[in-house]
Image (cartoon, rainbow, N blue to C red; front, side):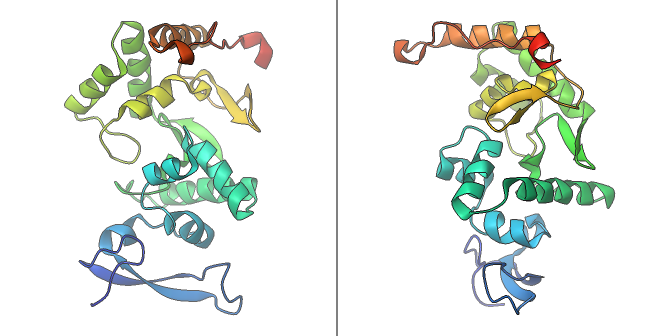
Length: 241
């Protein structure tokens, strides 16, 4: 089959996929054919809105983060929704529904699945709620423990990669991924909503005291004076009961 993948511009292993039509296109057209390489076709979400607004616009999660200058995938998605005039709640509902549908169908997690970031490492979305993914949860607790033992983020990356462990998307660990985990309050049983933090419905993997100790240690290790704060932000359990 001649041509190029309409997502990555690759020329090998091309397949033609019929997908939901672009919602911003002709409203009378419900389905359309797209030429993709096999790798892109295997990682494509079945949801039409996610396919066109996210998957076809960005070649990887890293590209999405860089485009929106966002520290986390969740923040990047918020910015994408604001930029494209999309309903954030509806988009995230579709993302979670996509993950749940794949889990219910027994489909194996795709190594290059672009929307795997919908659930934070250590959890899976099951029927709209975060459920602990035990093998990943053990890695999360290991990351926090190693950091408090004095290991640097780069050393933790090396250890995880050496042991054959991989991220949510099947890639090798990078320093920014470790830093995001260490600073994410979701692991204390909290969730971010509209720029704030509230108590979540999911099981915590890390105690708040441990999380606060890590924030203090991260602040202590900052070398550039202009990046230091007077004190690291602290979480208090009583604020979320």
